[in-house]
Image (spheres, rainbow, N blue to C red):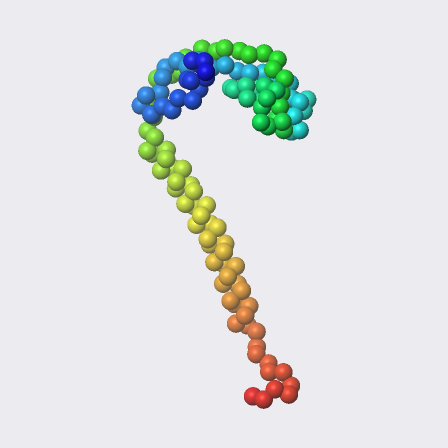
Length: 124
């Protein structure tokens, strides 16, 4: 595994984001079931190799670009961003719950409106 590939899989803590990264971009011509005829750009070459597991997204490698990218110094407040994401998820769950409760209440209301009429020949 090359140094670039190792760097690709590195997980950084929010306060340890590097100021420079090296990456390879692989540009290919899609020959798979879902990408046939398309230009494919990816940061790994799994789908460019003939031995790849997924023939649905196979591609013929046209070019590999090795890039060195400068990143800005960042001060990430990850906790606040995580809270925002969870709050948004909570709102979606609440909305879905309200829809389900409304549907159940409607079913209850419809049942309450029905009058019970014993069929003829039935003793009351």
